[in-house]
Image 1 (cartoon, helix red, strand yellow):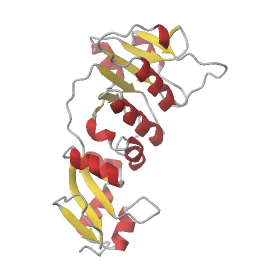
Image 2 (cartoon, rainbow, N blue to C red):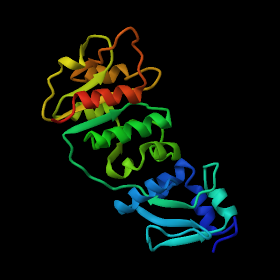
Image 3 (cartoon, rainbow, N blue to C red):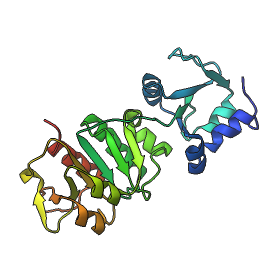
Image 4 (spheres, rainbow, N blue to C red):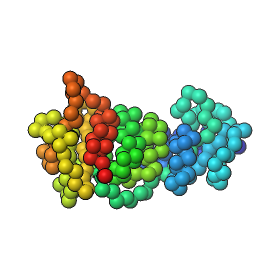
Length: 238
């Protein structure tokens, strides 16, 4: 059992709380049992860290037992976790008829919810701009409910994605837009949703195939995760 907070394994695990080390080692910490279950299901769990006295309910083989003090140090939860996982960044390379582009999404809960919805509706290829919140942030992971392990996520220039795209990509917005209900969806398409405060960047809108607007009554401000869900559902593959 590991009981020392200065143990090298503990120190290396703690580094994964920082973006630079997540990027360096291509690993991240997961805390919810159902998220750990998804990591195991997709062969992305490297190490299962169990609190002393807890059961290995998953029968996972690569297990480390730790003391309460170590578990408290590793956890971001207020309540004491019975288990924590060290997961590998997914190396998925997926083909998808529905693609999602995320432009500078800042709030972890929004990002996680968008990813969860994207997987549910078949948008399994995700492009994220460099200005987005880190998709392996612990709050994003929790909000994604493990969907992140089923997606092909690539950080890149969204402008280049649009310019090279062989299929239409729709930006969400209001100016010179068409109603979502009036869009005739092609076999393959992409949707761009933007920053919580400023929306999709003008240069991305200018390069997109068309700007689409969600028909709303009396109030024209929707949470970006809600707006993304409505657009993805409206233009889902049928």
